[in-house]
Length: 187
Image 1: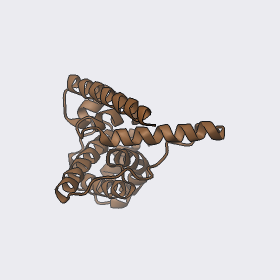
Image 2 (image 1 turned 90 degrees about the vertical axis):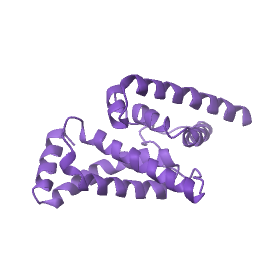
Image 3 (image 1 turned 45 degrees about the vertical axis):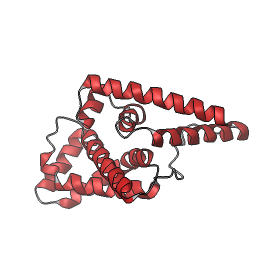
């Protein structure tokens, strides 16, 4: 959805037409769900996070100033909701297990069976390693490489400086690479 349309829908919602917000929910749910699922390792938790993200976004809609893309603003809220959920889970003693998370878009085309199995196994190793990354590094990597945000957008979403965003991304990549290498050795 184009930002001009987003702005029109936000204005209409703020002026008392909440139904104009519904297409925004529809348009941005998949991206938020993918981010939340990969941050938490849980489909169910991701669904709850998406709902809470839109609830908080709607409640704070008047605070959206339009300096960033609406999706970037939503990502910031989602990252905070994920962090809150992570803190609740740690206090409650529940450990997040990696569930059957959503696959990437099916635009890859058909693959031979052996290649498909190997790719699925590699994706599963990557998911497990992503979930094990520290809470400070995982969102930076996902925003940069899954959501393809610029460094400036990653910094803004995470409310950190650009150099801090670069550092988190680099550290996250290093830790992810080491985890993948260990998992490769275990296989």
